[in-house]
Amino acid sequence: MKTLLLSLLVLFSIYMGFAQHQPLDTLYANERQIVSLSFNDPIQKGITGTENFVFTFNHENSEKLGLLQAQEGPDSNLLVMTKDGHMYSFVLTYQDSLTQFHHFIDTSKNLINGIPKIKKQVKNNIVPNDYDKLCKQLLGQTKQFHQIQSKDGIRLKLTKSIYHNKEVYIVYELKNSSVIDYEINQLQLLKVLGTKKRKASYQELLIDPIHTFLMPKIITQGNTMRFILVYPKFTLGNNHNMKLVLTEKNGSRNFSF
Image (cartoon, rainbow, N blue to C red):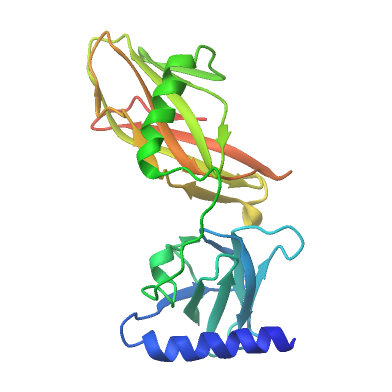
């Protein structure tokens, strides 16, 4: 308890020094809908200012996901500390109807952003410039694909997740056998919590890639293109699934599986 109070006092002092330069985001919540927050690093501590707001996260197995709900009452605030030492503060407001159910919290929102940190040497850590070298090797070695979907002359193939250090690599292949060029509008990978049968607990969390390799904008007719997307490392629990969504720009040849 003393450690938590000390952490909050440190957080408050930092907040007072930086608040004028970094305005706080407002999160809206109610008792009927679940709002999820994804951080770049596992959550270590999280506390709300009043009891009508509840922020929960996995205390036993560190996870990057936290859930927020609220009862009608006065505005409050949320303080979150992650294991990488970053600290975040949000304004909390009750709202009867919500339009946004997930927030991906970028590290630029942390309260100590801009304070110089001592860089530690980490073994086996990938330098961003080395992503392309590993991607080239994977493209040359990949022969077997795990998922295959086809629609209107467009075939999408992808491998199983390839884990390396703190990243996940997925090799994609798009083949256009139609007579019309295929222009990519969006390719999204999502982590799905629960099932649509239980709408109250169903959530889709977008996993943003941290690096792309040879991803095309257009697959011309008769051509096949392979490319790789690199994602931050993620794991799946018992009630988790993955979802892939590929949409065509100015067209209807869309995939969702």
